[in-house]
Image (cartoon, rainbow, N blue to C red):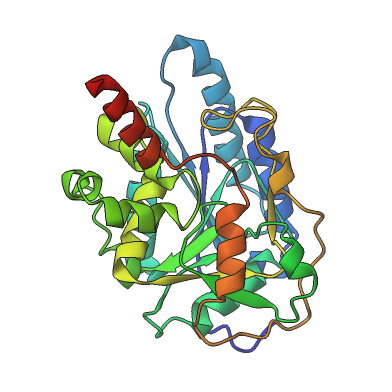
Length: 309
């Protein structure tokens, strides 16, 4: 166990109606050596209606039962009677935990982590805690060809990620959850181009959030860090894979992103940390990786021009 870790961050796990995913997620968290020094918070959202009430009940029943006998330092179950939705659940849950502990590691129930996951997250949180240029620690890394010859353990990009991540209270609490100025964003083509350059599809997500067609905490978090000029740390070898591409998830459909996952191998015995500076080549590769289509602001402009004809 690394001597650089002064205190272990609590882990907040968010679940809804997939008890099998939650069990698998926790099973892999248990394999981390730091589990017995880690407090675990299980946030279980309430049912949307009768259709999913039984599945939600099984998740909450499992969480309460698990809190009795487990290898973690402490387990706290936060089960909701009514449905809050993923965005509200994560915003309120992360806020409560990070304000009490000063830092937090966040995992959703469909993630499978490596045994080195908690070591990576905690060492990163400790190493960069006073470096305000670093806004978040990310566990997922795209399977980029450029990383095959990259000889460092970590790299920085301009964009945060939501598949296993961590942050500190002073970064999280300044995020403008209720005050994102969508009118300013949508009216500034230069700003939209810059934001879209972080990853294809971000501009469309901002538009859908503005229209109320999605309820995403993640795109607002990414946008906030982008506007603040804060960077995100990534491991060269991904510390997590997403197990939610089987159609069971609310926000991810089957077949969408298995190509995002690469084969996993445990992290090095000691992670070597780098200066908080963006690797431009890797940042461009990450931005190009997910999808290739015209940016939404261009499609929007084309539709407007066609309507005028």
